[in-house]
Length: 124
Image (tube, rainbow, N blue to C red; front, side):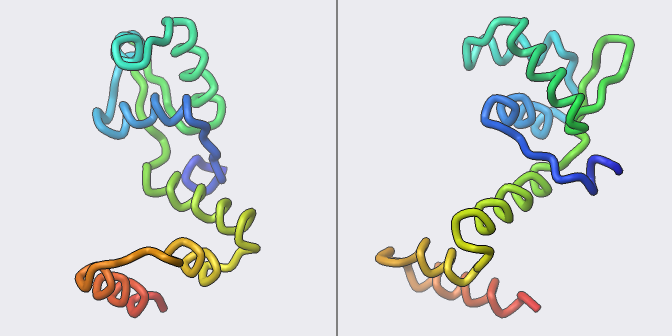
C-alpha cells in the first residue's frame, strides 16, 4: 500500500517537521534539526526521532547521501484524513452536523456566505 493510499495520521510534533518539508520540498535531516532547534527548541535527537517515525509511517522518504528528506504525503491529503476522522469521531460522520455546529452563533459576512454557497453547490 503506498503512502498516498494509506491513512497516515500525524501528531502535532510530526506536523512541525512536515510543514518544513511541504514548504521546502527537500531538506537534509541536519537542516530540519537546525531550523526546529531555532524555532521550537528541540534538540537534534528529538528531531531525528520524529523524522524516523515519519519515515516508518511512510510520510517521509529518505535519500542518501546526505539523509535528504522529502514529504511522501501532501498537506491536502493530511487535511482530508484528519478532517474525516474528526467528523467521524465527533459528529457521527455527519458533515451537516459538523457544519451546523461549527457555524452556530457565528456572524458571517455576505462574501463568506456567498463563498460557502458556492462551495456547497459544487459538491456533487
